[in-house]
Image (cartoon, helix red, strand yellow):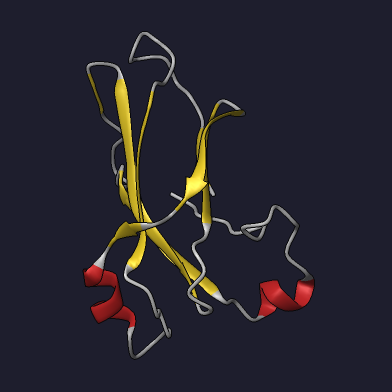
Length: 116
């Protein structure tokens, strides 16, 4: 699974300098890399993304090129604050996201999931 940060929360594309010196980090906790499972036709995308400035990042979830969610990563994740304090100065534990999306039916149909 690949998470690629290409745009800032305000929608602008990141500059080459910003891409070379990241001020954003994150993790996709669910679905995991080994399997994408749905429950009753619903796919859960859960994780976190944090900026060094503490401003909430925007999370965009797309299925087959269609945006199904766009919103702030602002759910409490105190575990992230504790785990990243030495590597990355996460200043606000409200950096989580939890999105439920509806992939195409039937569940055996391949689809592309992008979380950015």
